[in-house]
Length: 492
Image (cartoon, rainbow, N blue to C red; front, side, top):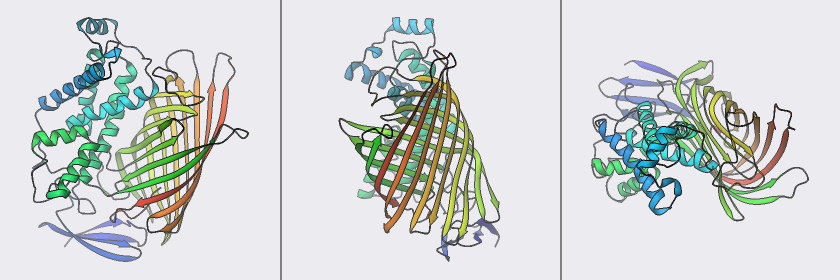
């Protein structure tokens, strides 16, 4: 019986291995807390990951639809958006006509002046819907991105009475693909076509809320009621971390403190250290931060990255995933607005120190073809542009030292540098520094404290005085770590 050798999943032993029976059954030996565990799963290594889950959706039960099916759905989503804007929201820009279409084709493209939230979150979310229209009808990540791009072009010319905008046709399909693929994969983890009864109904509803276009397609395709003899979707182990607490914000050393409530969610999907051929977003991290206080409930930030292409490398006991990553960052708080779309190289690495102590790091350098940036004084709720379009580079460094299950010490450092595309020449830089300490109380519950330092700068080559500001936040919170038993490590 042949054997494949894998690097240690847990860091507790030198290796783990799989005994493969090519007639259809294989035994997975892994190590947790120093003791081997045997898991018998159906399938073969060409179809299943280390945990026995499919590494691709089963094509027998998820056939690709003809091209015209997602094309019609994309156009339908576009004009459903127009109908919502025109008849429900009564938006001026949605009052389209043949005359507005002729104007748009004749005048061509521009950089628009829409609000920060609309351009850098609203458009990416709408792009995730058109992306999912193709993804849930059997098309892959890159093909689905093409459908989303086509939908964006159609909407820019025909969906508004303002000229088509460069920023929207970049933001909508590219960041829409990132959000759409993340929602598709999370909903795949939720769906289980082998289930029936109340559990099945609950899974279908939750998956449909997360990924509405997929939920609609499942209804149209009859998948919401079918029962299959085995799992038919790719699934990867995922950990979910929920934070709740308070944080104090200050505009400088002598500024008065402002207290806000906070609710954050982090998702770590897939095992970056499993040696395998990588597809887009087999591994990703997503974090969302919400602030509550005063008149506003604000999405402070949403950000994440996922692998597009990568290879696993092992050097002695250290294991890495090195590859090309896609990034999306959106910050919209009391101090600044910053959003970026970026692609670059990165490495996620595990350094076992002792049988129970591990250091995890993630390092990235990327090029941002589109970004938006502005220093603000108080929350910007304007429907119009106060920020600058630009592009540039960014770097990210994350590290977590896990002291067994007792505590963890982590550090995050982000740096964004952009130059303006439109208007007066200007250079913007933003550094974000965050040390954090968490201490376990019991089971998955921990308490923690972290400090954010934001360092903003705006520099003007025409001699105008530069602006440099530093703001700080202290956060105290309770953290609950929903640990997938198959993915028993908290990478950050």
